[in-house]
Length: 461
Ligand SMILES: C[S@@+](CC[C@H](N)C(=O)[O-])C[C@H]1O[C@@H](n2cnc3c(N)ncnc32)[C@H](O)[C@@H]1O
Picture 1 (cartoon, rainbow, N blue to C red):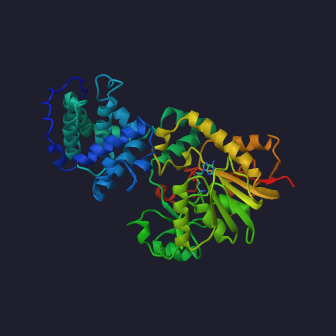
Picture 2 (cartoon, rainbow, N blue to C red):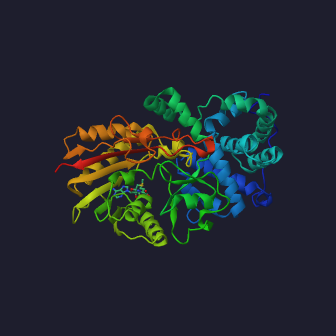
Picture 3 (tube, helix red, strand yellow):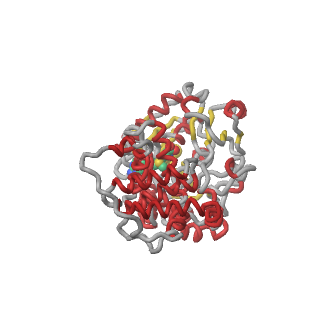
């Protein structure tokens, strides 16, 4: 069925003081979901900040924990499948929604995410969307259309959804295009397929990975991290959390720090350290670590993490662009700020909040930070540059340009076999490249890793 935009009688506007909506069970959660979806796709606000329990969006913070979980599930689903949902809604409309009908679009997407992907009764998803539309002066005249489109979606979903999902192209154009340019069509599709799946949870453990894998009901990965497909409760309630025996860190994120080799007893600087996953690896490997970062709040998290893990580091709040180091270090890790396009499985908002222009801008920032990093290391000392972007502009191309750029630097290529389980990820240029389509471990849900790039260089001696 195709629905006419003018379908349905306009409903009676609500009285100014009629607050009865707030008492409709489930409605505040759907309203919050639509509000936050607008903040992500219209204002390009990262989802994590909006759903922070202390500093998140007020409409989110007023919800109880169950509704917060529901809102997060709706948003993650609506963003992960945004293209699929748009197409399925679009086909039920006689003509496209007006360009300025953002609020209406968000109500439809929030409901469609529930109808198509979540374990919410269809009738509840439809009815709440209609009530929501009626309660907002911007959408009240479209409440009939909301009802018609969503009921049509309920009727056709069994047939239409599998066909739509088979296209496997659920990402904004700019992002798909860059993936295809960088990896070719087949690998780009495999990455997009991986982006539809919830990522497993990886742990870096201080010792005895086999024991922790058994206790968590997980596996030890070829690279040494422990992986669990799903957790029944919060990580803070797992054994060993309070004792600081492990920390959550994606298997790919655990690789760059290891590229510095044997650092026991060396002075090592982590130049973009917070919240400290890699810094903890450096400290655990026996280095005397100085952790730099410009963000006070992120350094507070690093400090708390180090207290729990019973590790120590000198912590320096500073902007790398402006400080001159008081001493030179034996080795440097620069895990630079980036587009985070390697973490889309956990952050499906990234392709909708970032753009090609952001990638170009970030590549400039990374180049400048790398230029600064050279001044922190002794002649002959190692520098590992890394980030969690899938884009070669922030990785392979930046590395090549830096080597060719007349800096006091020589390449220090990574050798296959250097770190167990990583041979497939060492590139012909001697760098490390991982993607969510890598590391196949039986089932898709157990497979994959974040997209990461890492390269190693030495300051000329
Ligand atoms: C990718 S995150 C680092 C993640 C960290 N290495 C880890 O493994 O937990 C990048 C960090 O760089 C910091 N940063 C960005 N620009 C900086 C600058 N100019 N000086 C110092 N720190 C900076 C950010 O505050 C952020 O914490």
